[in-house]
Amino acid sequence: MSTLMEDDIKRWTAKRKTALVQDIIQGKTTISEASRAFDLNPSEVEQWVDEGKRGMENALRTKPLEVKEQYEKQLRELQEAYGEAMLELRARKKLASLLGNEDEK
Image (cartoon, rainbow, N blue to C red; front, side, top):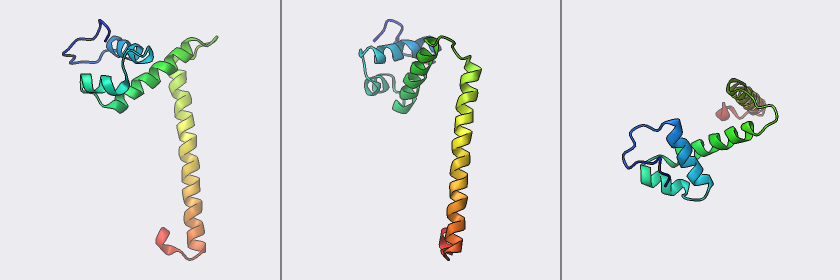
């Protein structure tokens, strides 16, 4: 592991997370190895890696988005997906009631 990694990490600062994510991206360790070594949830470490990759992608753009813009864009996309899911659910319920399948309400 990187020199920024200490045996007893009580708080995961951005600098420590970055060092761990870099080690994972460079192939020095894996998500599962890091999770076991530092007693972390693998999905949490995977989320850090995903956020790191998004940050790198944004940093390499010709016109980087501000963090606020990134979150607003992600929020809009999630709201659209939620709206579509709700419309589909309502349509399925309506279809079920029209077909006489009252159980599916």
